[in-house]
Image 1 (cartoon, rainbow, N blue to C red):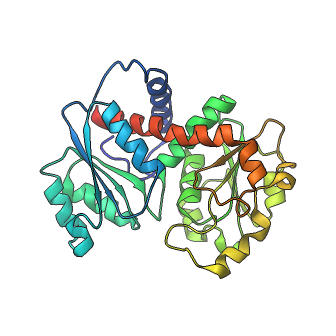
Image 2 (cartoon, one colour):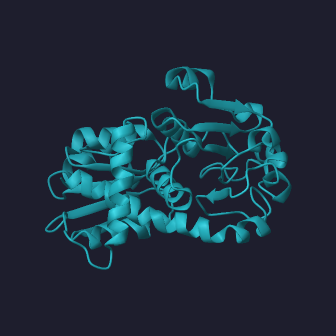
Image 3 (spheres, one colour):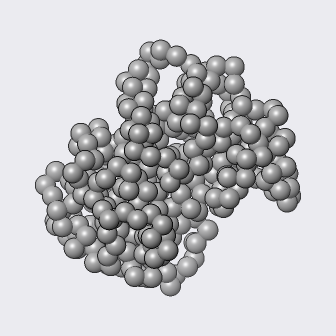
Length: 298
């Protein structure tokens, strides 16, 4: 694996290998057996704000033996209009890899092509592959497996999280239900491209949660959509609360990729009741991303 640009570009074998590696790296964190990034310098280019992504990658690169520099769009010439391909060709001659958190998926793709160095998608408007890997790791830890489980994603069905979940379900075979207002469901052309019969779309959150094992939610408005009151108003019936969870299987878990807006997409009481899982999920960003970095470094 030379890059991690999307879940779409992975497959069942690579997903399982990454999760298995994350389990191993997490277990041996206090006594690591190797430092595959020793002698390497990685760059992070972020045009979107971040807490978990920035901290987990900075810690992860260092724990794997490398050094890392953080570059916001205001720090470099991208902020003054330099094309991503020119930035890539410069950094590709100086650093060993790049982690990018930005808006356009094409920017990550272009950087990987022109920079000719390992490139990791730390979030775009199209996909959030690192988060999905952390979520899969959390499911494995909490429930033992995702096989035979019903995963439900509630909220905006046409955002980076839902699209990455759909690709993961296609490759790993678990049942996935996306529950969202009709205007916020994935478009038909995307679903035809994925062609995953184990993925169901619905605008009925109660029906979606029936017999669910994993209930996953995210903010209703993605970064860059703040202030879209009309869109936010569509999600009133899609709050993850006690009433909705009463339809799920006993022993279900609740996931939230954070940050959480309490009393909007999730109630305070539900978030606190499932906080151990949700913050374990946040921690797992570190271990999943170390697995990505280690696999790229092979």
